[in-house]
Length: 338
Image (cartoon, rainbow, N blue to C red; front, side, top):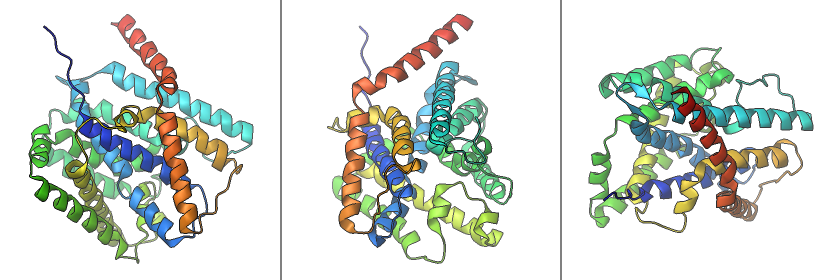
């Protein structure tokens, strides 16, 4: 008798929190922010939300690559999402007369860089499957540091971000599920204080070092030439930034509930929220139709409440239909080729 494998609600809950931070981060990024608390919240969000998403993608990519082969339908679906939404975003930009100099099919609009980077990670996963973690992870960090020193590294094919965030994917890929189980098995009076220490350590690491523009580093798209900082100094800061994000990832694993919750469905549908909210961001903020001056704590919290409402709304089941149709189309195409 077959059994249905129970969902891993730990990751559904984590992704629910992360996707809210993605939406909230774009609200803060796309509007003028002068409130000191809001600026701190902006740095906090960007310090770990995309690293954690990419870490989770790496962790679950184990089931997409077996025996040196990647599941073509999975990589194909991600690429199809990218092509469709990149085309849609370019059309909308044309309608609103927004023509940045680097607008092209392979200069990702807004957060679509994540899909293009993820597609690349999936393609190389069969290669790293045969290599040890002690080689791949340090090599990816060193490569990211040197790519960042190249003035040509930037948005095209999301090269800068793909290399900058790659270590999180590889760490997630090589991390055993047993390690997470051991962390989760710690007694609550140990686990929660340990998570609090990780959060405090992460925040203090950047909040107490005002001489570095951490937000620019956290975006992952700025090369060293743009930062106008010595290579050794900025490389040490980039290494520090990896540590900041990993502390927050550890905190999430330690502290988030692993039971089905009211937000679990949001986590399950996080990709549709991720893609759909970018259209909303373009229509509202990039087009300058709406401008929110976040200059007080009250405006900040109201903005976050709006971000929460958008996150919940876009996670509803009927917004998932286009994604199911795309997925079925790719799977059907793949089955025909087989």
